[in-house]
Image: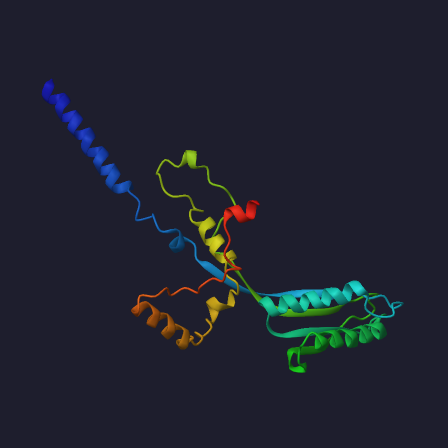
Length: 226
């Protein structure tokens, strides 16, 4: 009887070991940056300037919006600013006037004529088709991140969740000033060799390499409290 139970226990142990060997997953654990990459997508930003045929031109709000649009283009835009004018619409005349005003604002903001790409689009019969400003830009997002949430309480295999690492990658993508740098990195600029030499010579002589503060820059807590 003892031999029977001993053999049964040994058989059960071997079956458990075999099951673990068969069901053990492949190397699923990866670093967050390996599981979800930063993806760069080309898109566009647009400004619609809606005009009525009875208007006399751009409003003050629209003029301010154009200036803000140019600011955004300088920060994250690529290529020229597109200026699209409606054609064959009921407000075609005022649209041409507004387009001329828009060009004047763009020139006043420092744009050259090569940085403005003008054109018309068909707007047959429309009452108030807008004058459209646009530019090309790039956005960075976390790739392959699932919006649905996984119930980790039912994760019996103890595998990492499908969204493991998404928060890290999303934060990295949000911190990139210009996502286009991931597509075509900018060249390294030149260094200021003179300043480096001055700092190195001070280091060799045992002097302080930092910039000395003047008496006006120095303060204490007591001075701030008084």
